[in-house]
Length: 397
Image (cartoon, rainbow, N blue to C red; front, side, top):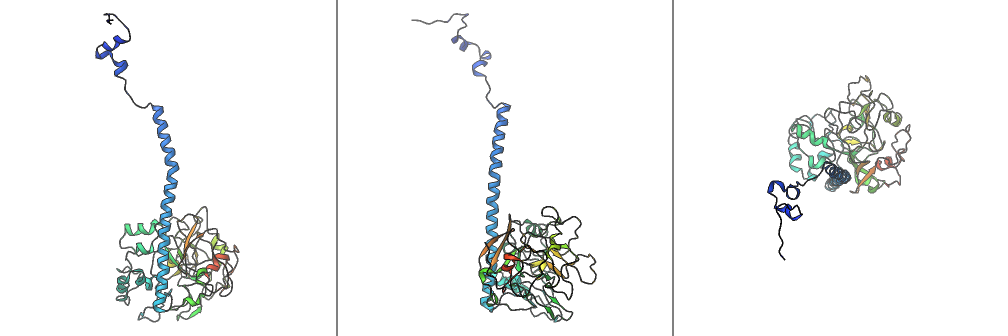
């Protein structure tokens, strides 16, 4: 049978013989998404990002926290190596044979630890020039970049300071334990001749100048005693945040001749806090910024107390006689451990292990308790972990 197509045939097959301008029905249809379809796809992608982003951020923070813990472990190991070499712990304050014997030079414990942190050349540089300048006077030594050793990856402020100004002083996120005791800005109460009026005997790195404390003095056990923790570095310009700043108080911290055994109340410092992680708007903040001098043993620069729990306010009281509001933390300081890790801080114990301590750790909660220079700490588990000889059996959960 022979099939033919008539001239005026409008059947289905004849449509294929139209001239090309009339073939749009089958051959000129453009593909693509409609607006509704596009919006649906965007919504799906957005939902996936929203689900995945917290997981990515959590993974990154976990990596940063692990790196931070490793750095604290290196500090703890350096402490042990110093002890093995010299038979005593790195002192929290050192003279290093300075010629001016009337001044108690305040080099931090990080300085004698440098050779045990693979920084022997830097230490030798200091030892060859320390008779003429201190390691926070803007010399080349004080501007050394020890980011890989003393800065926590979770805290950007220290890195930002170095990036913005290569000549900035070396900062540190890591702090030595002064125990459950509130200290003067220069570690201990001394009179005008340099004689110790009373000594902080509680923390691993506290004690009078050039004290040579040993591991044998840690009566509470090296696995139950904190050696190092963290302190957030303040942002450039300041933000009135408890991370790296300290607020001025005019009571309940000891003045000249007073002891924290007699004059102390944690409530006054706690009351400086406003909303969230910020100080109250009325608070005056110190010009001495926490952590901005890695080699200065003043407690506001390199120390902390196990009194208030992690991520609490830090406070200071000025020179006893004038209380002028000038911002100098010349007398008592209560410095809390702080960090940008979610919910707490890392601590390195005397045995070299590193733990994460929640900011909800038991600290006794007695806001009127005074410090003690012997016996059990009045500041709960947190205080007990800071004392080297309190006789407590407490350990971190």
